Image 1 (cartoon, rainbow, N blue to C red):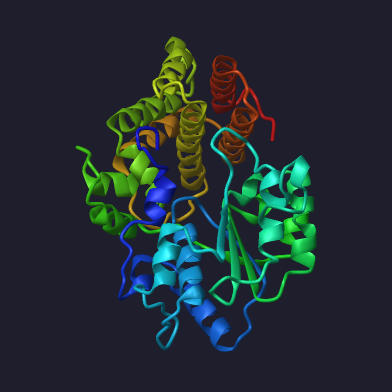
Image 2: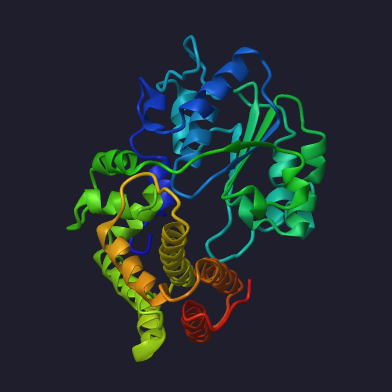
Length: 381
Protein backbone atom coordinates (compact mmCIF):
# COMPACT_ATOMS: atom_id res chain seq x y z
CA UNK A 1 0.00 0.00 0.00
CA UNK A 2 2.78 2.36 0.92
CA UNK A 3 4.16 3.12 -2.53
CA UNK A 4 1.00 2.78 -4.59
CA UNK A 5 -1.05 5.76 -5.72
CA UNK A 6 -4.31 4.01 -4.81
CA UNK A 7 -4.93 1.67 -1.92
CA UNK A 8 -4.23 -1.97 -2.61
CA UNK A 9 -7.72 -2.89 -1.42
CA UNK A 10 -9.23 -0.59 -4.04
CA UNK A 11 -6.77 -1.86 -6.63
CA UNK A 12 -7.85 -5.40 -5.86
CA UNK A 13 -11.53 -4.51 -5.79
CA UNK A 14 -11.58 -3.12 -9.30
CA UNK A 15 -8.92 -5.22 -10.98
CA UNK A 16 -9.69 -7.60 -13.79
CA UNK A 17 -13.36 -6.78 -14.31
CA UNK A 18 -14.89 -9.21 -16.81
CA UNK A 19 -17.67 -7.89 -19.02
CA UNK A 20 -19.04 -11.30 -20.04
CA UNK A 21 -18.47 -13.39 -16.91
CA UNK A 22 -18.35 -10.87 -14.05
CA UNK A 23 -18.39 -13.40 -11.20
CA UNK A 24 -15.29 -15.08 -12.62
CA UNK A 25 -13.05 -12.60 -10.80
CA UNK A 26 -14.57 -13.50 -7.42
CA UNK A 27 -12.62 -16.50 -6.14
CA UNK A 28 -13.29 -18.79 -3.16
CA UNK A 29 -16.75 -17.41 -2.43
CA UNK A 30 -18.95 -19.85 -4.35
CA UNK A 31 -21.21 -20.60 -1.38
CA UNK A 32 -21.89 -16.88 -0.86
CA UNK A 33 -22.63 -16.45 -4.57
CA UNK A 34 -25.06 -19.37 -4.45
CA UNK A 35 -26.72 -18.00 -1.33
CA UNK A 36 -27.43 -14.64 -2.95
CA UNK A 37 -28.46 -16.31 -6.20
CA UNK A 38 -31.17 -18.24 -4.37
CA UNK A 39 -32.15 -15.26 -2.24
CA UNK A 40 -32.73 -13.05 -5.28
CA UNK A 41 -34.54 -15.78 -7.20
CA UNK A 42 -36.93 -16.12 -4.26
CA UNK A 43 -37.20 -12.34 -3.85
CA UNK A 44 -36.03 -12.64 -0.25
CA UNK A 45 -33.23 -10.08 -0.27
CA UNK A 46 -32.76 -8.46 3.14
CA UNK A 47 -32.20 -4.74 3.61
CA UNK A 48 -28.92 -4.95 5.54
CA UNK A 49 -25.98 -7.32 5.27
CA UNK A 50 -22.68 -7.39 7.15
CA UNK A 51 -19.80 -8.97 5.23
CA UNK A 52 -17.04 -10.14 7.59
CA UNK A 53 -13.68 -11.78 6.97
CA UNK A 54 -9.97 -10.94 6.64
CA UNK A 55 -8.98 -7.93 4.58
CA UNK A 56 -7.96 -8.33 0.96
CA UNK A 57 -10.01 -11.47 0.22
CA UNK A 58 -12.64 -9.94 -2.09
CA UNK A 59 -15.50 -8.76 0.16
CA UNK A 60 -15.63 -5.35 -1.47
CA UNK A 61 -15.32 -6.91 -4.92
CA UNK A 62 -18.24 -9.20 -4.06
CA UNK A 63 -20.37 -6.26 -2.86
CA UNK A 64 -19.60 -4.33 -6.05
CA UNK A 65 -20.55 -7.27 -8.26
CA UNK A 66 -23.76 -7.82 -6.32
CA UNK A 67 -24.66 -4.16 -6.84
CA UNK A 68 -23.91 -4.52 -10.56
CA UNK A 69 -26.26 -7.50 -10.82
CA UNK A 70 -29.06 -5.65 -9.04
CA UNK A 71 -28.64 -2.42 -11.03
CA UNK A 72 -27.94 -3.93 -14.48
CA UNK A 73 -30.35 -2.57 -17.12
CA UNK A 74 -29.94 -5.54 -19.49
CA UNK A 75 -29.75 -8.25 -16.90
CA UNK A 76 -29.51 -11.70 -18.52
CA UNK A 77 -31.06 -14.78 -17.04
CA UNK A 78 -29.61 -16.02 -13.80
CA UNK A 79 -27.45 -14.28 -11.26
CA UNK A 80 -25.43 -12.23 -13.73
CA UNK A 81 -25.04 -8.71 -15.07
CA UNK A 82 -24.41 -7.87 -18.71
CA UNK A 83 -21.28 -5.90 -17.84
CA UNK A 84 -21.74 -3.60 -20.84
CA UNK A 85 -24.81 -1.42 -20.22
CA UNK A 86 -24.48 2.12 -18.90
CA UNK A 87 -25.49 1.02 -15.40
CA UNK A 88 -22.84 -1.71 -15.23
CA UNK A 89 -20.18 0.68 -16.47
CA UNK A 90 -21.22 3.26 -13.87
CA UNK A 91 -21.08 0.71 -11.06
CA UNK A 92 -17.56 -0.27 -12.13
CA UNK A 93 -16.55 3.41 -12.19
CA UNK A 94 -18.30 4.15 -8.86
CA UNK A 95 -20.45 6.82 -10.53
CA UNK A 96 -23.89 5.18 -10.55
CA UNK A 97 -26.39 7.65 -9.01
CA UNK A 98 -28.15 4.88 -7.08
CA UNK A 99 -24.98 3.37 -5.60
CA UNK A 100 -23.36 5.10 -2.62
CA UNK A 101 -19.93 4.31 -1.18
CA UNK A 102 -18.85 5.31 2.32
CA UNK A 103 -15.44 4.61 3.82
CA UNK A 104 -13.13 5.93 6.50
CA UNK A 105 -10.96 8.84 5.34
CA UNK A 106 -7.24 8.11 5.36
CA UNK A 107 -6.59 10.74 8.03
CA UNK A 108 -9.25 9.54 10.47
CA UNK A 109 -9.44 6.48 12.77
CA UNK A 110 -13.26 6.45 12.48
CA UNK A 111 -15.95 7.02 9.88
CA UNK A 112 -17.11 10.63 10.45
CA UNK A 113 -20.75 10.97 11.42
CA UNK A 114 -21.22 13.67 8.76
CA UNK A 115 -20.93 11.00 6.06
CA UNK A 116 -24.17 9.54 7.39
CA UNK A 117 -26.24 12.57 8.38
CA UNK A 118 -24.40 15.58 6.94
CA UNK A 119 -22.37 18.25 8.71
CA UNK A 120 -23.78 20.37 11.56
CA UNK A 121 -25.28 22.91 9.15
CA UNK A 122 -27.03 20.26 7.07
CA UNK A 123 -28.06 17.56 9.54
CA UNK A 124 -30.36 14.96 7.94
CA UNK A 125 -30.28 16.96 4.69
CA UNK A 126 -27.15 15.28 3.35
CA UNK A 127 -25.24 12.05 3.83
CA UNK A 128 -26.02 8.39 3.32
CA UNK A 129 -29.13 8.29 5.54
CA UNK A 130 -30.68 11.12 3.54
CA UNK A 131 -29.62 9.94 0.10
CA UNK A 132 -30.68 6.30 0.50
CA UNK A 133 -34.22 7.48 1.25
CA UNK A 134 -34.52 9.34 -2.06
CA UNK A 135 -36.34 7.86 -5.03
CA UNK A 136 -33.97 5.83 -7.25
CA UNK A 137 -32.75 7.75 -10.27
CA UNK A 138 -32.55 4.87 -12.73
CA UNK A 139 -31.88 1.54 -11.09
CA UNK A 140 -35.16 0.90 -9.31
CA UNK A 141 -33.14 0.37 -6.11
CA UNK A 142 -30.82 2.36 -3.85
CA UNK A 143 -27.67 0.58 -2.67
CA UNK A 144 -25.12 1.75 -0.11
CA UNK A 145 -21.79 0.02 0.56
CA UNK A 146 -20.02 0.98 3.78
CA UNK A 147 -16.39 -0.09 3.90
CA UNK A 148 -14.40 -0.03 7.16
CA UNK A 149 -17.40 -1.05 9.26
CA UNK A 150 -14.91 -1.84 12.05
CA UNK A 151 -14.38 1.91 12.34
CA UNK A 152 -17.80 3.02 13.56
CA UNK A 153 -17.92 4.93 16.81
CA UNK A 154 -21.07 5.03 18.92
CA UNK A 155 -22.23 8.33 17.44
CA UNK A 156 -21.84 7.05 13.89
CA UNK A 157 -23.67 3.81 14.65
CA UNK A 158 -26.51 5.68 16.36
CA UNK A 159 -26.85 8.03 13.37
CA UNK A 160 -27.49 4.98 11.20
CA UNK A 161 -29.95 3.42 13.63
CA UNK A 162 -33.18 4.78 12.11
CA UNK A 163 -32.13 3.69 8.62
CA UNK A 164 -31.36 0.20 9.92
CA UNK A 165 -34.63 -0.10 11.83
CA UNK A 166 -36.83 1.44 9.13
CA UNK A 167 -35.02 0.89 5.82
CA UNK A 168 -36.51 2.72 2.84
CA UNK A 169 -38.33 0.54 0.29
CA UNK A 170 -36.08 -1.01 -2.37
CA UNK A 171 -32.93 -0.14 -0.44
CA UNK A 172 -29.92 -2.33 0.28
CA UNK A 173 -27.17 -1.60 2.80
CA UNK A 174 -23.92 -3.63 2.77
CA UNK A 175 -21.38 -3.16 5.55
CA UNK A 176 -17.88 -4.59 5.21
CA UNK A 177 -15.75 -5.44 8.25
CA UNK A 178 -13.20 -7.90 9.55
CA UNK A 179 -15.18 -9.77 12.21
CA UNK A 180 -18.41 -9.79 14.18
CA UNK A 181 -16.44 -9.06 17.35
CA UNK A 182 -15.34 -5.71 15.94
CA UNK A 183 -18.92 -4.50 15.39
CA UNK A 184 -21.02 -2.43 17.75
CA UNK A 185 -24.21 -4.14 18.98
CA UNK A 186 -26.27 -1.44 17.22
CA UNK A 187 -24.93 -2.65 13.87
CA UNK A 188 -24.56 -6.37 14.52
CA UNK A 189 -28.08 -6.97 15.84
CA UNK A 190 -29.70 -5.39 12.78
CA UNK A 191 -27.64 -7.06 10.05
CA UNK A 192 -27.60 -10.44 8.37
CA UNK A 193 -24.00 -11.66 8.71
CA UNK A 194 -22.26 -13.17 5.69
CA UNK A 195 -18.88 -14.74 6.51
CA UNK A 196 -16.04 -14.86 3.98
CA UNK A 197 -12.95 -17.04 4.30
CA UNK A 198 -9.37 -16.25 3.40
CA UNK A 199 -8.17 -17.28 -0.04
CA UNK A 200 -5.85 -20.20 -0.63
CA UNK A 201 -2.29 -19.43 -1.67
CA UNK A 202 -3.12 -20.79 -5.13
CA UNK A 203 -6.02 -18.34 -5.46
CA UNK A 204 -3.86 -15.43 -4.30
CA UNK A 205 -1.27 -16.47 -6.88
CA UNK A 206 -3.92 -16.55 -9.61
CA UNK A 207 -5.02 -13.01 -8.78
CA UNK A 208 -1.44 -11.74 -8.60
CA UNK A 209 -0.77 -13.21 -12.03
CA UNK A 210 -3.68 -11.14 -13.37
CA UNK A 211 -2.07 -7.92 -12.14
CA UNK A 212 -0.49 -6.75 -15.38
CA UNK A 213 1.04 -3.66 -13.76
CA UNK A 214 2.50 -5.43 -10.71
CA UNK A 215 6.26 -4.92 -10.75
CA UNK A 216 8.30 -6.88 -8.23
CA UNK A 217 11.43 -8.99 -8.19
CA UNK A 218 9.98 -11.26 -5.50
CA UNK A 219 8.60 -14.54 -6.90
CA UNK A 220 4.82 -14.35 -6.98
CA UNK A 221 4.52 -17.78 -5.42
CA UNK A 222 6.54 -16.58 -2.42
CA UNK A 223 4.24 -13.57 -2.07
CA UNK A 224 1.14 -15.75 -2.30
CA UNK A 225 2.35 -18.14 0.40
CA UNK A 226 3.41 -15.32 2.74
CA UNK A 227 0.19 -13.36 2.25
CA UNK A 228 -1.97 -15.46 4.59
CA UNK A 229 -4.84 -15.64 2.09
CA UNK A 230 -5.00 -11.87 1.46
CA UNK A 231 -4.32 -10.24 -1.91
CA UNK A 232 -4.00 -6.91 -0.13
CA UNK A 233 -1.19 -8.24 2.04
CA UNK A 234 0.50 -9.85 -0.95
CA UNK A 235 0.56 -6.53 -2.79
CA UNK A 236 2.09 -4.84 0.23
CA UNK A 237 4.74 -7.53 0.46
CA UNK A 238 5.56 -7.00 -3.22
CA UNK A 239 7.49 -3.95 -2.03
CA UNK A 240 11.02 -5.30 -1.53
CA UNK A 241 11.58 -3.04 1.48
CA UNK A 242 8.50 -4.42 3.20
CA UNK A 243 9.36 -8.02 2.30
CA UNK A 244 12.90 -7.69 3.66
CA UNK A 245 11.81 -5.96 6.85
CA UNK A 246 9.29 -8.68 7.57
CA UNK A 247 12.09 -11.26 7.50
CA UNK A 248 14.16 -9.13 9.84
CA UNK A 249 11.24 -8.84 12.25
CA UNK A 250 10.59 -12.60 12.24
CA UNK A 251 14.24 -13.26 13.10
CA UNK A 252 14.02 -10.83 16.01
CA UNK A 253 10.85 -12.50 17.28
CA UNK A 254 12.46 -15.95 17.07
CA UNK A 255 15.17 -14.79 19.49
CA UNK A 256 12.52 -14.21 22.20
CA UNK A 257 14.19 -10.83 22.79
CA UNK A 258 12.91 -8.62 19.96
CA UNK A 259 14.02 -5.40 21.68
CA UNK A 260 17.70 -6.41 21.57
CA UNK A 261 20.23 -4.43 19.52
CA UNK A 262 17.94 -1.40 19.68
CA UNK A 263 15.60 -2.97 17.18
CA UNK A 264 12.93 -0.40 18.06
CA UNK A 265 15.02 2.14 16.11
CA UNK A 266 14.95 -0.16 13.07
CA UNK A 267 11.16 -0.45 13.34
CA UNK A 268 10.75 3.29 13.72
CA UNK A 269 13.05 3.88 10.75
CA UNK A 270 11.02 1.48 8.62
CA UNK A 271 7.82 3.32 9.58
CA UNK A 272 9.32 6.73 8.87
CA UNK A 273 10.55 5.52 5.46
CA UNK A 274 6.91 5.42 4.35
CA UNK A 275 7.10 9.22 3.96
CA UNK A 276 5.36 12.15 5.57
CA UNK A 277 1.87 10.78 5.03
CA UNK A 278 0.53 9.77 8.46
CA UNK A 279 -1.87 7.27 6.88
CA UNK A 280 0.99 5.35 5.24
CA UNK A 281 3.02 5.36 8.45
CA UNK A 282 0.09 4.09 10.46
CA UNK A 283 -0.53 1.31 7.95
CA UNK A 284 3.09 0.20 8.18
CA UNK A 285 2.80 -0.07 11.96
CA UNK A 286 -0.41 -2.07 11.66
CA UNK A 287 1.24 -4.33 9.10
CA UNK A 288 4.23 -4.96 11.39
CA UNK A 289 1.85 -6.13 14.11
CA UNK A 290 0.07 -8.39 11.59
CA UNK A 291 3.39 -10.05 10.79
CA UNK A 292 3.98 -10.69 14.49
CA UNK A 293 0.45 -12.06 14.97
CA UNK A 294 1.02 -14.65 12.26
CA UNK A 295 4.32 -15.67 13.88
CA UNK A 296 2.72 -16.31 17.25
CA UNK A 297 -0.38 -17.91 15.74
CA UNK A 298 1.77 -20.48 13.94
CA UNK A 299 3.70 -21.01 17.18
CA UNK A 300 0.46 -21.72 19.02
CA UNK A 301 -0.68 -24.15 16.32
CA UNK A 302 2.63 -26.00 16.52
CA UNK A 303 2.55 -26.19 20.31
CA UNK A 304 -1.02 -27.43 20.36
CA UNK A 305 -0.47 -29.74 17.38
CA UNK A 306 -3.25 -28.07 15.43
CA UNK A 307 -3.40 -28.94 11.75
CA UNK A 308 -2.58 -25.98 9.51
CA UNK A 309 -4.16 -26.23 6.07
CA UNK A 310 -2.46 -24.85 3.00
CA UNK A 311 1.14 -24.14 2.06
CA UNK A 312 3.60 -23.28 4.81
CA UNK A 313 6.14 -20.54 4.25
CA UNK A 314 9.59 -22.05 4.80
CA UNK A 315 11.25 -18.98 6.31
CA UNK A 316 8.41 -18.33 8.76
CA UNK A 317 8.38 -22.00 9.80
CA UNK A 318 12.12 -21.91 10.40
CA UNK A 319 11.88 -18.86 12.67
CA UNK A 320 9.01 -20.37 14.64
CA UNK A 321 11.12 -23.52 15.10
CA UNK A 322 13.89 -21.38 16.60
CA UNK A 323 11.45 -19.86 19.09
CA UNK A 324 10.08 -23.32 19.90
CA UNK A 325 13.55 -24.34 21.12
CA UNK A 326 13.40 -21.44 23.60
CA UNK A 327 10.02 -22.67 24.80
CA UNK A 328 10.84 -26.39 24.96
CA UNK A 329 11.62 -26.33 28.69
CA UNK A 330 8.22 -24.83 29.53
CA UNK A 331 5.21 -27.02 30.18
CA UNK A 332 2.72 -27.09 27.29
CA UNK A 333 -0.04 -24.90 28.81
CA UNK A 334 2.56 -22.25 29.68
CA UNK A 335 3.95 -22.19 26.14
CA UNK A 336 0.47 -21.92 24.68
CA UNK A 337 -0.25 -19.07 27.06
CA UNK A 338 2.87 -17.29 25.80
CA UNK A 339 1.65 -17.27 22.21
CA UNK A 340 -1.89 -16.24 23.15
CA UNK A 341 -0.67 -13.40 25.36
CA UNK A 342 1.73 -12.22 22.64
CA UNK A 343 -1.12 -12.07 20.13
CA UNK A 344 -3.21 -10.05 22.59
CA UNK A 345 -0.29 -7.64 23.04
CA UNK A 346 0.03 -7.22 19.26
CA UNK A 347 -3.68 -6.38 18.97
CA UNK A 348 -3.31 -3.94 21.85
CA UNK A 349 -0.40 -2.32 20.00
CA UNK A 350 -2.61 -1.89 16.93
CA UNK A 351 -5.27 -0.20 19.06
CA UNK A 352 -2.66 2.26 20.30
CA UNK A 353 -1.57 2.93 16.72
CA UNK A 354 -5.14 3.69 15.66
CA UNK A 355 -5.41 6.04 18.64
CA UNK A 356 -2.38 7.94 17.26
CA UNK A 357 0.06 6.95 20.01
CA UNK A 358 3.64 8.22 19.77
CA UNK A 359 5.41 5.90 17.34
CA UNK A 360 8.76 5.52 19.10
CA UNK A 361 7.26 5.00 22.56
CA UNK A 362 4.59 2.56 21.35
CA UNK A 363 7.10 0.47 19.38
CA UNK A 364 9.65 0.28 22.20
CA UNK A 365 7.07 -0.70 24.81
CA UNK A 366 5.59 -3.31 22.47
CA UNK A 367 8.93 -4.99 21.73
CA UNK A 368 9.97 -5.02 25.39
CA UNK A 369 6.65 -6.56 26.40
CA UNK A 370 6.85 -9.20 23.66
CA UNK A 371 10.31 -10.19 24.89
CA UNK A 372 9.09 -10.57 28.46
CA UNK A 373 6.07 -12.56 27.28
CA UNK A 374 8.23 -14.87 25.14
CA UNK A 375 10.47 -15.59 28.13
CA UNK A 376 7.49 -16.34 30.37
CA UNK A 377 8.06 -13.25 32.49
CA UNK A 378 4.83 -11.45 31.65
CA UNK A 379 1.47 -13.17 31.45
CA UNK A 380 -1.33 -10.62 31.09
CA UNK A 381 -4.18 -12.33 29.23
